[in-house]
Amino acid sequence: QLYTGQVRTVTTIFMFVGLASSWNLIGGFAGYACFGQVGFFGLGGYATAVLMTHYAVGFWLALPLSAAFAAGFAALVGWPLLRLRGHYFAVATLGVAEGLREIVINLPELTGGGGGITIPTAGTDAPTPWLGNDGFYVLFLLLAALTAGVTGFVTRRRAGYALRAIHQDEEAAAAIGIHTTKAKIIAFAGSAALTSAIGSAYAFQQVTIFPERLFDVHLTVLMVVMVVLGGAGTVFGPVIGAVMIAYASEWLRQELPLAHAFALGALIVLAVILLPQGF
Image (tube, rainbow, N blue to C red):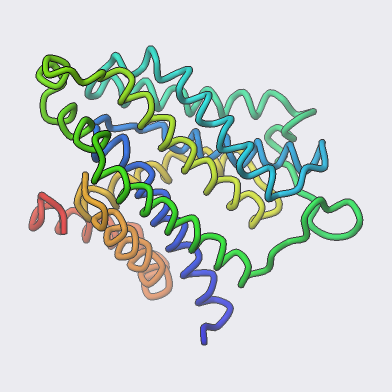
């Protein structure tokens, strides 16, 4: 039996397990470090908020619609961006996320702009009633299981071997017949769809969302750190990394309220030095 605060903490951990596993598809398997992943998180959240607020679409329909929209957007921008490599790709994807944030801010009639948007969750105006702490606990658990399951499915299929080959040597992968562009775009779109679904659930959980929160680059940094510490390109590595970092962050915030960020950073640096290949 968990207390309300503990339920919320574990729910947050489940959210980060899903985010880390979804980033692992493009960053861990394919080796393309996407620093704009938070853009898909925010895109899913705002797409769901707009659908539920302005068009009275129920959450259970808004979530897959938001994920499909994010996947299509990722495939569209991925076509030119995935021709870049290394830090060029990382910076370009970061620019996409910042561009999405600016678009949201400059469409106040639709998104609420910088003042945020509130999803109706109670009364006759609510397309779907708020799920409550226990409901979101189960929802994020299912999303975390889904993302980890997708990763496990991919790793045992031809697509997983293709992405690993691209990570090791993209020219050699193309030379043996792998359609590298297609493989990268599918991985990028799949990663975006899963991240968007989690962003959709997060927006519904928070009720009122703001651009600064949903497009916070800090979220992408946490995803990357969790995957690297757990073990990039593995199924359980991101899960382990997400659980450890999320739990450590919550514990340090309670025990060291004035220095928790410094302490967490020191632990991460120490872990990277001692375990460069991840747990």
